Image (cartoon, rainbow over all chains, first blue to last red; front, side, top):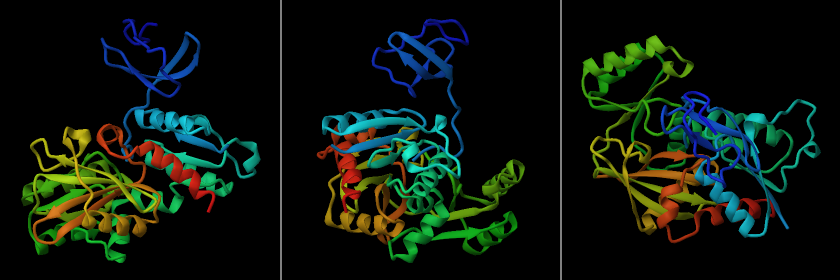
Length: 55
Length: 285
C-alpha cells in the first residue's frame, strides 16, 4: 500500500489492527488503520496530538 | 466466562497488551473505538455489547471523560469511574483532592487571572512551576525563574486565550534528586514502580526522554500511594511521587489512563493481567 500523501511504500505489519497508527517512512505523515479485512487495509488521516492527550 | 470491553481512540501497545491478557485469561474480549461509537438520550444498555465491564483507555482526556459519562448513564460498569477521571484529569481538582485527604503534595497556588497570578508571584517569589491544569507528558510545564519569564508566559496565555488559560496553577519547585517515581496502583494496591530520571532538564516525563529504572516499592511508597489512590476515588492509576529533601515523599500527580509500556517490560508483576482481573473483580463485589 502506498502513502496517500507522498505515494511512498507503506509497511503495514500483518498483525496491525484497526485503530493503530502507521507512519510513512518518507514524508512522516501518520495514518490510522480504519478498516482491515485480510490484506485489504483502509487508512484515514490520524488525529493530531490534542491539548488533552496523555495519561 | 466474563466479558470485557476495552474502549480506545488510538490503539497503543498498552491496549493491545490488555486485549492479549484478557484473551489469555479466557475472557470474551472486545475492542471498541470511541470515535465511531454513538449514544443518545434514549440509548439503553442492551443496545450495545459492553459486556461485564469497560476499561476506558482513550488517549484524549475529554473524549474518555464524556464517553465514561455515557457509559455510567447506561449503568455500564467502567474503570475508571467518571468521578475518578474528573478528579485526575484536572491538576487543580487533583491537588485539592490530595490535600483534602492529607496526602503529602507540593504547595500549590491557584489564581484566576494573569494579574492575580503576578500578585501571587510577587508575594511568594521565584522560582515556581507553571502547569496547565489540563494536559500531560510535561507539555506546557514551565519553570518560572524570573519576572521576564513569567511575563512572557502570562502574555502567551492571553494570546491563546483558551478556557483553561485563565486558570493559573503555580507549584513550588521541589528540591529533589533529578528523578521522580511513577507507581501504578490497581485497586488501592501499588503493583509496580519505576524511577524516571531526568534527561537534563527539570522534567522527568518518559514522553520527553526520561530514563526508566525499576524502583522497589517500599512501605512508605505503598502507604502514600494507597492514600493518593483513595483520595481521587481509586481504580487503575499512575501515581507520581517526588523525593522532597524537606518533606519526604510528595505526590504531585495522579494519572487516570496510565501508560505502562516501558514498566511492563521490567516489572515483577504482570501489569495488564492485574488490570484486567481488577476490572472484572470490581463488578463481582
